[in-house]
Image 1: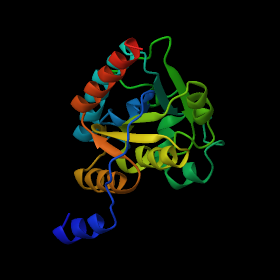
Image 2 (image 1 turned 180 degrees about the vertical axis):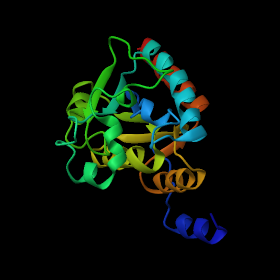
Image 3 (image 1 turned 30 degrees about the vertical axis):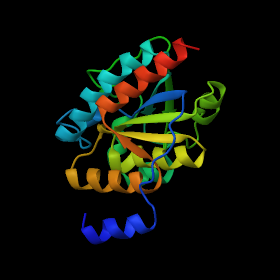
Image 4 (image 1 turned 45 degrees about the vertical axis):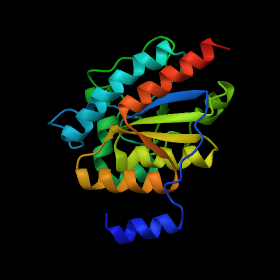
Amino acid sequence: MTNELDENYARAQYHSAQSWGKRPALVLIDFAQAYFDENQPLYGGQGCQTALVNAARLAPVARAAGIPVIFTEVKYTPGGADGGAFYSKVPALACFDAGRDSQRLADGLSMEPDDILISKQYPSAFFGTSLDATLRWLKVDTLLLTGVTTSGCVRASCIDSISYGFVTLVVSDAVGDRAQEPHDANLYDMSAKYADLLTTEECLSYMRTVQSGASGQ
């Protein structure tokens, strides 16, 4: 990013920091095997692998802190009858047809009994799903977003998250894309307008702080 762009954004007060809440939820967006199998058209390479490794570090700490852990998956009726124009636009979405190995949760992550699974057919974790209602029932005020891909379903979920009124935090090294350029550009834009960015280490510290605060009440 150029100095001129940074100066322009600074005049608009983009990248302003938010006040983080005390009731976060950790959201793991679309960590499907399709992104981690070199034989699949959606293979995401090292950027997605790094995101997976870091998200796997966050989940057990969130559970220990009493923070809801929410997984999303893309899942279609075989043939994509429920995928609409999105399925038609991106033929590789057939990787997420029910029953295919590429649709399942990626190796390296596992769901625990108290975790929540949201199935979706479109980019945002909110669109056409029960996620908003679930978060409000849980009295969540802040979302910690991880997942793949940064420029796709993570970005779409980020925009909807702030639109629904949640403080939105994107864990910058626990989201990934198949190329560095779209990853960096979308992180920059999300930071400017929709979310605060934090690293995995900062996210771990925040979750432990929330746990300590809750235990002291």
